[in-house]
Length: 431
Image (cartoon, rainbow, N blue to C red; front, top):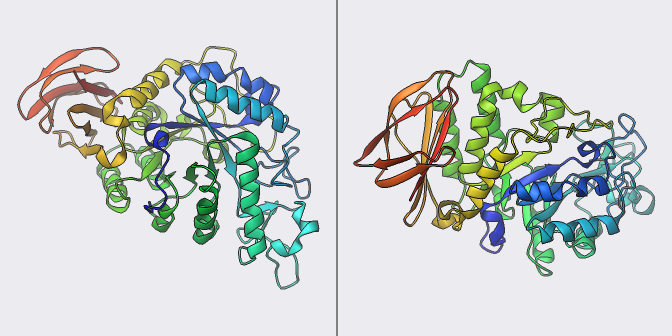
């Protein structure tokens, strides 16, 4: 990241929970979702990310309700979800429960009947026929023209409007790489004059490293795709997974926060639930996402766990009739991440080191450390029980306790031996 944009300190060891408001409850409203805030706070959610809250265009609308990402105004609130006043109160309540709130910001395009098409048609790109269009083949949106300085100013003022009206804590920037980098630099420079915010980019830093000059965190699509391919091919060798992790470590500055995830609104609706994609690997991947260096992302209903693909353009509510089976699992991970010194130190002071082990084609082992606070994480990415796994613990000696089971062991010497169940995982904390 650019030194002129140091991140807000709270984002460095947090987690982000995506809220699909339309599908979250039977009502699909802010008022109904608000009842879930205490449960989410108890689960250790650090940041609530709301998908776009702006009204949805009617022209070329997909399905009966349309796409969140085809807005008709940047400053109005969608009546489908509630009111700006209700959202302001929700943000205040979330803050009182210790959570931050960010909103989705779609800067590359608008819906086809956005109010600017009438008031400022010069804000949009036009084809040779003088018609609005979208360069990516999406037929329910049209592209904005970033060569127009006036449009840029209005876009930034719209972002500032939400900052001031609702007291949000940041932006998740949709398809950030489609919007010129110099706009994001301009936007953050101007908005930071008001107050510091958290900036999360929907892009992979391996594909767009320059964008990390302005964003605090970015998606790890290449890791997610590598994990999916690994599972599809029979979960044989994890060497390519290690290679991808090394790529992130080599490209990103020490201060960057890669965002690890297994699901989101696009993945769930179009590519399948995490159980469809990963099967037994889904839970080990959640452990990885929560313990590797960076930020962990979670999607609405993963704690249930939700086993269905949610319709994107229709109302298709999650089923909360039973207590979420994975609530305690995620609470355990989130609270560890929020409190243990190996995770809470600023990224430049954290150390994340992959450890050698005797079954390195199946087991990912790594150490998190800050000063004398040490954590060792072991994940078995295979369907086989593995016994007497020799791990080079890299100078970790003394009493360690396993996070999930409270099993205590004394580590001595350079190596220690572990046992892992199929798709098993362990987190060892130095006492």
